[in-house]
Length: 289
Image 1 (tube, rainbow, N blue to C red):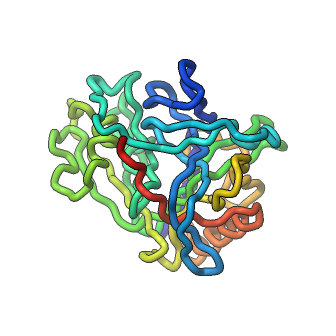
Image 2 (image 1 turned 135 degrees about the horizontal axis):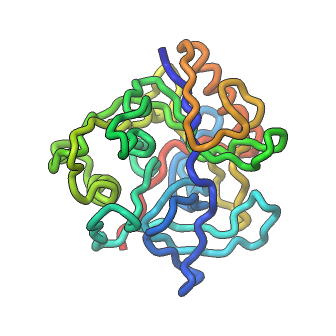
């Protein structure tokens, strides 16, 4: 039976470097969100359209930055980030307090999620998130507000699992035998610059996309075609079955029937459209500079 996972990650907004208001270097601190600008495909009246899109997401490598024209309210972004990948990648030596990985990654032909909260390092054991299956739905987002009556979930990514690759974090050649391109170098190796000193199997999940749906549903990030430098708030989800308004760091996992999972996905899709967003289903891989 499929599962619905409400997954909280840090919701703060990345700002430019202190040395330059037009640039954000590769993040070495805590994870945060960026309001991103990228070419991509979105769904419009059941048709795919290609244009320049804006959306909230994760991109820990560098980005060029512009300040928004006007801050409408506190839910709007302050900055617009155009992501890029350095032609020469930095090298992580210890994996701690150094170059961050990007997880989930929504750029390219398929969304990917490979690590976050899949294991407990101190206890050397996996969590339920390392045992997900095709058709499971992950909502990546963050909790806004602390009081139950005022809190809600800010959505940035809907991830419907299509398939996965299992890997061992102690294997020096983990994921090396798969056609992952530069993903292994700028995401996986940032998290595991050196193999773990104990064996543990995790999963690299691939998201179902619009042309390869699972149970008639697919991964997407709420987006809007670019029209101005004002930006828009993240989709707000509140008082929705299977979700908690004020969820803390621990994911909420609910087992449901296939029919219930499809209905839940449609509710999230409807909330996205009702708040003026579209479903961004493929974002062009950032250019290399």
